[in-house]
Amino acid sequence: MKQTATATLCLLIFIVFAFPVKTYAGFPIGKYRDIVVPSFSYYSQTDRYDINGNIVKGQPGARFSSYSTSLFVGYGITRRLDFIASVPFLYQVNAFGKGNSIINQGLGDLVAGLSYNLINFNYKRFLSVQVSGVVPLYSTNNGVSPLGLGDYGSEIKLMYCGSMPGKGYFNTELAYRRYFDTQGPDQFSFLVTYGYPVTKHNQISVDLLLFRSFSDNKAFNSNVFAERDYAFFKPQINFGHQFSRRFSLFIGGFYVPYGINTGVGYGGSLVAVFKL
Image 1 (cartoon, rainbow, N blue to C red):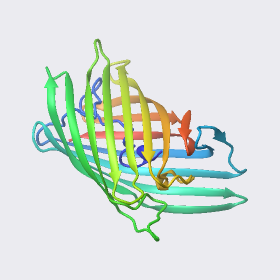
Image 2: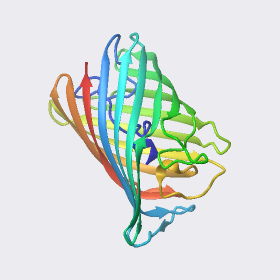
Image 3: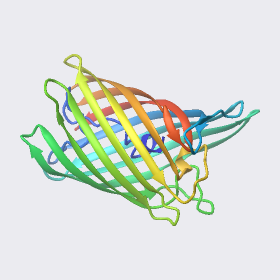
Image 4: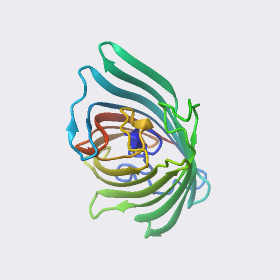
């Protein structure tokens, strides 16, 4: 989905600040510290959910697939204030059956902004706010592009994360994004993550993402990057391993069991985390 394959999505990928039990997106990076996160994700759909949430079977041989790489960077300006930015590169295959397909590739939407830690609770739990801008890095044809909505936008995100009793950790994110177009859209998302270290260097985690995009344009688009009015629920399971104090690797898989006006999607991600 868009929140997964693009910067936000990315929004759906782990950023590790302390291992093995802390992978909080709202955890401060630290003054003068850097974090670099390259990632690869895959998304595919054949069937779709209609406006009422019912599954509609796709045409024989029809499939939309997206292969994306993304680079996330974060820099600690102060102990509480961080700069963050992410840039995706997309490779899409939209097959219509009978050997007909369209391939699109290029940079997606740049998302960049600032994250500020409002308060910490004994350095075990953190409440942070993040404000970002969205900039399309591709051209459009009459305002349309397969690589994204082609509009500038802004996003505000409230994040609360920390340690659970015992060894587990949690992360919650509530986000609102607005694209500056007459059709919007206005997008809301809520993410809950729970993780648990199974050994000293390994951990498992579960993400639950609720996403809703509102727009006057109700048309269904098999390309999720160009769709405006839709909703979905997406759970994801992840496994992470720490190779060294500065390098960790995560792999995850997801499926969309419910949606409105969007694809019955599935896929996965591979994420490398470097702490500099």
